[in-house]
Image (cartoon, rainbow, N blue to C red; front, side):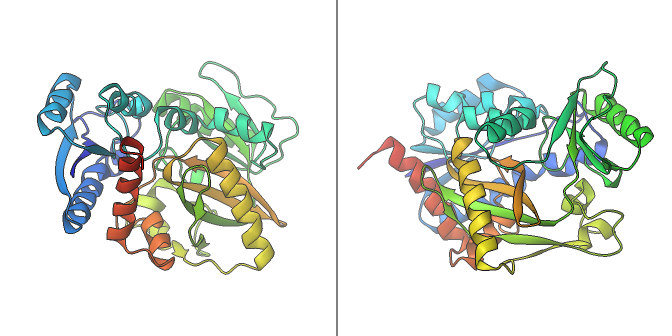
Length: 334
């Protein structure tokens, strides 16, 4: 079976954000190399197919490769992460089965406001929130008490999140909202800050997902706030990176694990995730609040999803093979 491992490249000048954001933007190529190696190890004819600045060239290369399926690692198009769902929509138009979540789930989960609205409508706990569009004044956030958490409405990989994202006063709130508007050119999402334990919950499958061993983020005392910032996720030499260490499996009481499982599985299914995904949760007073639903998480060997899989008895090569065989099964049903 020939598998096209597709990933996006990044232009020299980013469309928005800060220059340091390039670290995560360029991570897709390293991720693709790991997936390619794992597939080759398992006997697949794996071919790397990068997506640069030309859709016609990309489609031409896919046509030349003529794969049986696509391992989709594209997180946007030429520096624009908001086009992630459009890239995923190319594959069904070409009658190609692709791994991971489909265009609808990718678009839905990238929009944090739509995701939270859906979760709330189905009774899934998520932090209370307000949204401020560019040009709007910051509301008084009636009903939301400080501290509050401010982040971009439609970014992933912790883009736009720093220690300054946790605000304690109205002046700090206005300053951070203005930063999101100016730097990321989109709405600012204001959330109640949940002071509790944070978990990354990885799942595999589709309509009946399987939860892998949850991972807890252990926050060091030297951090300005107990949160995972962009630096904490990507800059390995930073104090924030060393201060946000994962612990997998997370130490959980049976009732806590059952609560995490129930909320994570509901969020995964409601948002239409497929093959693999991650739900980030904060638990306070026994209540698991969904912070993010990630339909296209990093699946590099050292990333959280692969770590949870290993702890659950699934080596990296098995994980990648399982994902690609799920995609192949959709093309060649039994």
